[in-house]
Amino acid sequence: MIDIHHHLIYGVDDGAKDLEMSIGMAEVAIAEGVTHIACTPHSVDSYVYQLETNLERMAEIQAAVAGRLELILACDFHLNADNIQDAIQNPLKYSIGGKGYLLVEFPEAAIPPQLGASLNRLKSVGYTCIITHPERNPVIVKHPQMLADWIRMGCVVQVTAGSVLGLMGEAAQKMAHTLLTNRWVHFLATDAHNLDRRSPRMSEARETIARRYGADYANLLCVTNPTAVYNGQLLPEQEEPLRLYDDDDYLGAPWWKKLFKGRG
Image (cartoon, rainbow, N blue to C red; front, side, top):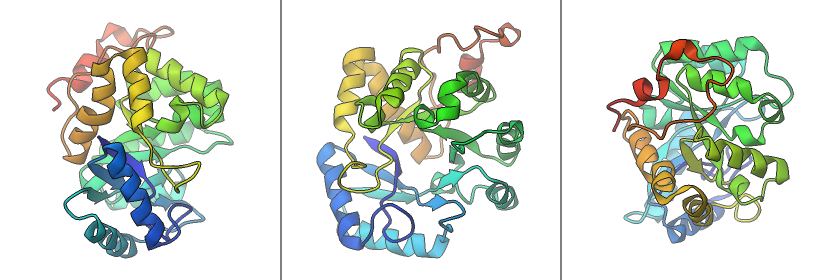
């Protein structure tokens, strides 16, 4: 499996606190069957994204798990005005491995229309936006049509393994399974922060998805799609989403086939 959202780098945000914890989290991931991790320090007001520090500390962790786990740098990119401007001025800076896929986190208090519009601005400079853990965002849970609109414009979606298992609360679990049922999800990831409540465990959630929604879909979310992201490739054709056009037929266009055709 490939985990595309993991706060493995120590001392740069609210993730791993020290090198020992980083290595411990990496060891858990290896035991879970994870072969690659995208290290995703926050870029938000309270945590400045330190590119050189991130690279140096990631190299330390990589040396400790050499041959057993491969790491790549990414970012947990909070969608605020300063971040958006910097990302546009420095195309692909915050993307996974600098290859185009950007993990985007929306604020939880309010999502003004201009933030949704900013996704198109990021797309125009080469980013493909991955909406992170929408099942945990109370605004999106209350207004899922916003997520439908973003998917229609070409965004893709990541849910948290803990949400699937109910570890992030009942509302997040219900929303995660609604999104999975409707095939609006493209990635499963841990969003690991530590070895306790926010641990790097992924295999049980994958097994749950395989049991409830099919092994092929679970493999798509945990292996096939993340591999494409890790390599900077287009995604393969996805399972057809349900209810994405209930309120708007989007001119009748088979969006999901057009967007993902030839990816892989």
